[in-house]
Image 1: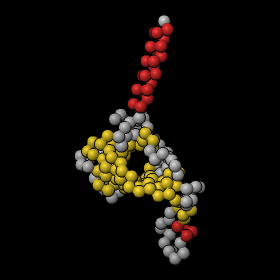
Image 2: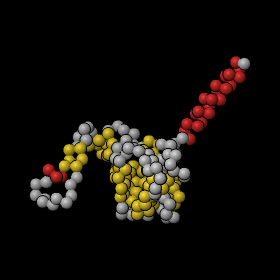
Image 3: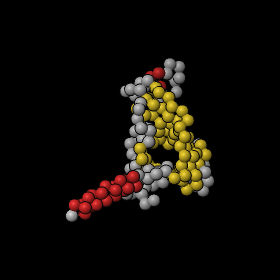
Image 4: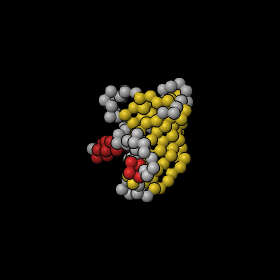
Length: 167
């Protein structure tokens, strides 16, 4: 009886160790290369109040942090049919499509609606949810991401696919 219990317990541990990594969705046909990283002191940028001569009230930007930040610039290449895998970031990212077209999906969207972006277009990932970037276009695609993170944060966290998306 002891051997049976030991075997059962060992099997449960092995099953858990094999199953747990499968919850994350790994990238496929997706290559991310960190180009640059800068460490910035506390930021307090407010162009609305910092302008001294510009009288254009059509555009403002505000950015403030409580502590130092790591700012990454990462170049991503996505092969035809490739995907980043579901993942999140602990801070916001500005993503610019530089080549081709990508399709982005957010875990917050209960309909898993595709959002397509072409070369020259950009979007913001606020970093508060899982998302995936896919190349569904039939031609290679590339993006550049500028990420703002608290110093020392992990840049990317692999996430499981949400139940709202069937792929």
